[in-house]
Length: 416
Ligand SMILES: C[S@@+](CC[C@H](N)C(=O)[O-])C[C@H]1O[C@@H](n2cnc3c(N)ncnc32)[C@H](O)[C@@H]1O
Image: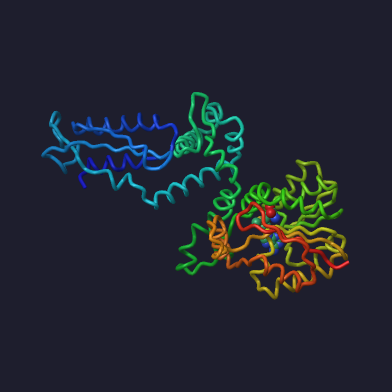
């Protein structure tokens, strides 16, 4: 490929994008092409094609190359007429790898903005120049670049007032918990797959997930997709003392205690999750009724609160016990049923593996299953959970799907 076409193709791959603010791109592309044109004295035509896919536009340029075709632009003598006719087709047609490329970058930035506390601003009033310049110079420049990139990808819209979410961006940010969970929680082990596959490294020994953002992401996604249904189920029960096993940042535990006028104990093995949980307990002024303990929920015998608990909630924890074997999980639940008072409830949230026969698009569950495979964990479908609970001495009252793809809630009870 001649160097001028190479420059153009590089340029065009940058400006191809999904945006309602196509004009911004056109102007920028125009300028870029003009620079190339000036440097090689070329004649060029610019065409814009909006018909590839709804909301997606591509820009194509054709420049006529003269007899010097193939020589670097710098060597082309001033005034020499050069025309380039190299096709940009390959650079502008749909190429699925670039969808993945874009998704990776967009997900990373949205999750990072949430993790640094800036996404709330973007979701509320938008981010103006005053927010950008109020940072250290490098951070300000990167924030501006991040927002411009998100504008190029149609997630935000740029105006004189600054940057605000587009309708598309707002839709994406409703599910930001999933992005935080993946990028913030599992970014490190996902980056290390090659060392697990071929470098003799092991998850849990050489690299681990990030406890703060596994919990933070789970609380965000659960708050929207699981907790409302969970609370509806709990309205059919009555309880005063809640134990949350694997409580994460305790958002669920705190809101249950507040809404159902109960006392709560939260157990989590992650120091980072416990630190966030304690901060939330203090911020919500519920230190008199919610206690957070950093401990292994696998050691039920050491959890004194269990014997006085009339509701155990455990969201996205039990598959960690299952990783030790189904017999271990059954022994664990059997002990729980033995220690709990008669008639106590157990509310479990889990995720089913992809159901190949469903015929529906499999959203999230293949990735969720894969991330757990990375940690040597497996997921089981709802009917297997029911069998495990019944074998362990619980009576299963309800099994309910929810808005989380593959998400299930199981409400069980010890015998009276
Ligand atoms: C996916 S997060 C869910 C957090 C919370 N239940 C929620 O739904 O928002 C799973 C939590 O279980 C915790 N966890 C994992 N193994 C544990 C164990 N053996 N004992 C206590 N907590 C554990 C993790 O630290 C993490 O905070």
